[in-house]
Image (tube, rainbow, N blue to C red; front, side, top):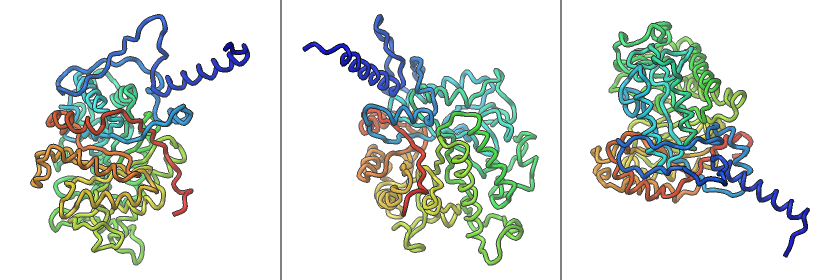
Length: 463
């Protein structure tokens, strides 16, 4: 049957537009009709030491997630969503770079190998530590270059490159999100201040610091510290197309023995009448998280705020809302991080609790905690943090089982609102247990999944 010219033209327009949208959605250039595609596929991860696989130039995928949202919302088909993330720890060169080096070329190749390895496992997010201890993995007006990047704190790279801009671009090229992970309150990793740059805040503003357990911390109760840390976050968001700000579990430091964090003088200055020390500390952290949230929504609405707290908020024997666990430290009582309050206030776009215990560990069961966190997954995104570093490396013999991580991911999938996993840390799978990753993770992550993280306005919802 012949179509009328006007209807035929209309039909071709619709089909052509749909094809263009599909091409844009998958981040590829339109395929030329006069020559076959030369795109090479990424091999499955077999050897972490193989050279990085060259990838084709991409267009849409080089954009940050915020710029992709209009295209994704208009996509002609709905794809399953699932966060598949890995933490890339840079402090003490745990994951990357292997060593600090002012010649960035060698470190580039290692980072590309890491990205290609996890892209081949169908991961879609890297959480990269860009501030370890009052330092920066990028040229910054707020902090000196990290010695874990360049070998000596405060020294730049010889080629004057911007390492963070390059890392983000390469991550986006592979269709992956880049979450900028910061440690806000840890100021040093050692008591030895001779390794610090003269620009480090400990030397510029010693009144901001508190010494505890052979290292230094920014004092969370000092308003000048809070203002400084907000400037750090603003600088990152202003200059780099990151997809999220990510903060881990280090707020107030974990208690060491019977030593208490010595912030009594700050409490006397800034604590309110009738307020106890614990509530004051939680208020300081609440204010910090709330201030970041308000800044992002006002000035950077496309950038998400994610937090990965200690996996137990409170034990049930201390709070009826808590989990059926007997954890020693808890986020609320030891690091003074009241995640439940942040969720209820709509301040965090996602939470990735560190459920670093085996599935049936008696004191803090991974399975029990999955059920507990699922209760809050209708109020914010909840992605589960998994301890890849414990594989065959823990006193709990459950970690000797090669399929422990696979079982944890399977257990998470039983809860429909828990939409993904994040694994700590990158080198545990890539360098130490690549065969386990290939055999088990690639089985459960057998197909790619889009991670269309939309920053939601949770405050409009009624709870």
